[in-house]
Length: 233
Picture 1 (cartoon, rainbow, N blue to C red):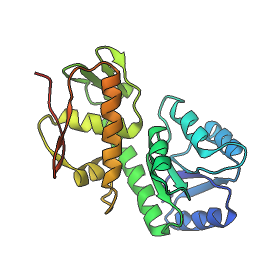
Picture 2: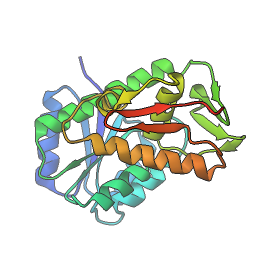
Picture 3: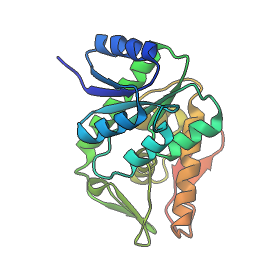
C-alpha cells in the first residue's frame, strides 16, 4: 500500500536521486524540486505529508522557506531539514523557525528513512488527539483542536514541537519525563546523541512562555533525569 507523499527540495541531483530511490523503496510517493522558489510554490500548491528541505538553495534559501511555511497557519506540513551545515547555530535556527527535525550531510539513508517514519507517525498520533478537550495550568491554557496556547489570554507562538512538548508536560503535572521518553513521545524515536534537541526546544519554550507574561516557571529541570511540569501555587 502506498504510504505518504513527500516533497524533497534539494539542488544536488545526486542526493535527489538517492532520496527518490531510498524513500520510494519504503513505499513513499516522492516529488522533487531543485529550486527553493519552485519548491515553495509547489508546497503551497499541492498537499504533501512531509517536506525534506535543504538549507542552501538557489533563488530562495531553506531558512526563508521554513519560516514562510511555518507561518502559513492551518495544518502545517512537517519539515525535515537536510543540510551540510553542521554548526549548532544553524540547527537551532532551523528548529526555531519551525522545522520538526534535521539530518546533517553526509547522512545514512536508513537513518533518514527512520526519521521520516517517526515524524509521520507522530503527526498521525497528533491528529488522533486533536479532539482532546482544552486544559489549563495556572496562567497557561492550551487548546489542542485549535493548536492554540495562551498565557493570561495572550497568544503564544509555538512551533509544532514546542506545542507538543508543552501539551505532553501539562497533561501530566508532576510526572518526570526523561529526555529519551520525550524523544520517543514527541519525535517518535530514540536516537543516541539527540537529547540536546529536547534541551533546545525546552529552552525556547520556556522563553516564549516567559515573554508572554507568565510569572511562574512551569517547566522544571530534574537534574540528571529530565523535565516535569509543576502548576503555579
